[in-house]
Length: 245
Image (tube, rainbow, N blue to C red; front, side, top):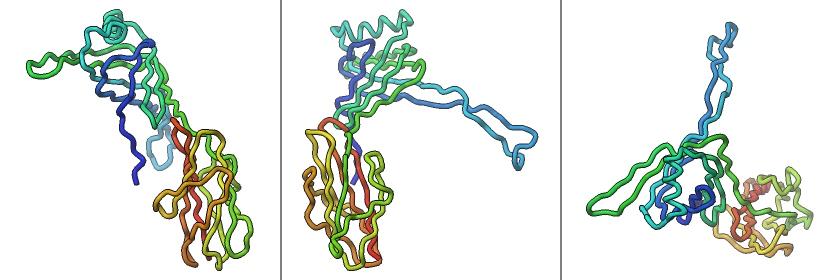
């Protein structure tokens, strides 16, 4: 199942003011220059390169022309004539909750006045300096523990559980047909869910042991995935591959 999200609700802010009725945003288009570092003893006579300067590229956007948007569109157009560099913030809509922040100068304006369509314009902003992407993620889990059926012993996570480690392997006894897990979330409000082998999601209560989670037959691995989600933030996913020898 895809985790893709639509861009509806994204906002472009120029010099502290949201531009009215933006319909499409593209960019930034980042690139890194390369520097030829080839020398007489380069292995196998192949060229060698190192990274040079970065380029934040451009951002283009289209919007309906709103003449009454004096603080947004009209100020933006005025800044284009003045050749002013201003702060730009692109805020991706919920549930992504992320921002691109950079300085930019207007390098292009393309107005359209079709007889049988809306008045609009397309603008190009050249990114000046480093464009910064900030993603507002859920804080995740403080603890993740579990037990297995046959021995009642604690599950041995490899590596040991850490909030910022998202992939684990676990080995259980051959006779075990299920495990139980306890996941504790860092903050409220939140939800915790789990699923097995990309199946349907089920809800967990923070700090409360789950019911029996069936695992596969002997000589197989079972994928157990846990989602930790805070309202208005991007969820964190923890994946465990449970091996039953």
